[in-house]
Image 1 (tube, rainbow, N blue to C red):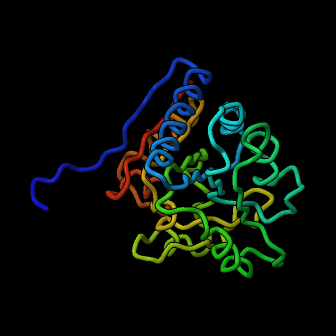
Image 2 (tube, rainbow, N blue to C red; image 1 turned 90 degrees about the vertical axis):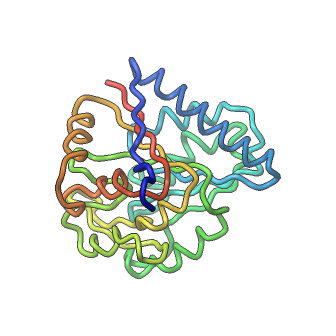
Image 3 (cartoon, rainbow, N blue to C red; image 1 turned 90 degrees about the horizontal axis):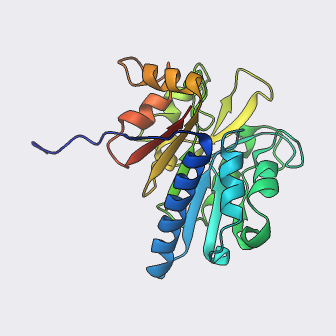
Length: 238
């Protein structure tokens, strides 16, 4: 529409990780409580990795009605959920405890031998999460991947195509465990708000590069930063 303002990512900088985690947790809780005041169940979609663990710890200590909150994963490593590499295990150890143990959690891993074989069933399992997701928390690797949408992974172009139906897709990571499952871009953007959580100077340098011109397949996070559907807030601390 002529004259419509472009939707740009909002950048929030913090002095340290503690301040960032506190602010992001507060915003997530406010979003969840807005949903509950509106009389609907809330949904929170998160990625794994090292950076979100402190956020999960903070949220797990928050006294809200977790029984009316659905929690799901944006991506998963195709390993046993008891494995130390599993995003599901990370959530169970850092988020789904204390009051937050009452949350309705839906994992992505199933008994299929490969992510490609299990992708359709994984999508069916996550469908109960209320959508649009109230809040999606994503990270970013120094190679520019987000969720498990990795550069050079077979099927990446289709996974980043916003015209595709929301789905789970098989991806290949450049590091072990290589077999990954991810929500595609259409599924990740079926949200009211998205946060990109970045800690450290390396992540800032990658983010700075991702903001420049270049193909999204080279740095998949560009697809998230350039889309015009959902507000994205970038949370960064050194």
